[in-house]
Length: 259
Image 1 (tube, rainbow, N blue to C red):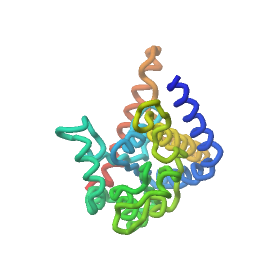
Image 2: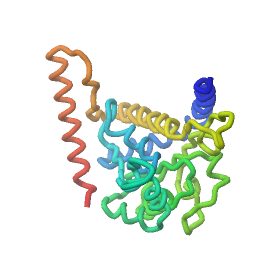
Image 3: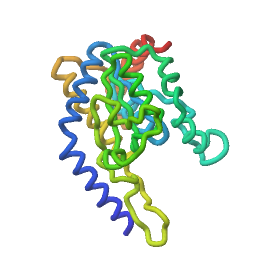
Image 4: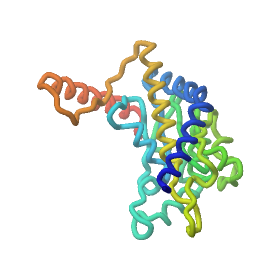
């Protein structure tokens, strides 16, 4: 079955992540934990499908304030191939120089904020520009990318840099060049892409490690709890209080960086 082919191929990706990326995950988490304890942010940015991992990290069940996802609608939400908010527009905009810099003008970012940029190919202008602009502001930068894909790619940014060359630390999602994993007889190209899933796994690993480091320092933020289950009245009220603390803490933090 082709489904089994995908699961088997992705299992290999996951094993490579576990065996090769643990040290980098720990380093990334240390930087983000330092930012959160200083009342700043781990900032998350991706365009196209690379925005999905930013939303998977925050806000959702099990997440905690201190993350700041940037979702530029024109490049992070593609509702269909053609028409309004179509694929053509998104693919065009993420290659336009100056757009990434303009987006960051909306945020008063500063050290020790950490910028995390997700781009599987690592060659599109927007991601590279966001990383470079963040570095100009003094932020530590992390790229989440496919090294096997990116090393053979040519950057669309005028600097000639690919994402892994523009950041301080790279997390390799270990997805093979081309992203899709399964060959189907008669189909002109492989199907079943893996990068979004792999990126989510990498960033949730960073989030888990960040929480561990925060706990070791006695810094305990409110966590958005599971609330879609049967609870006693006392448990439900406790969950509601925690959720309200989560909202309040996020609002307090975000007010400081929006321009």
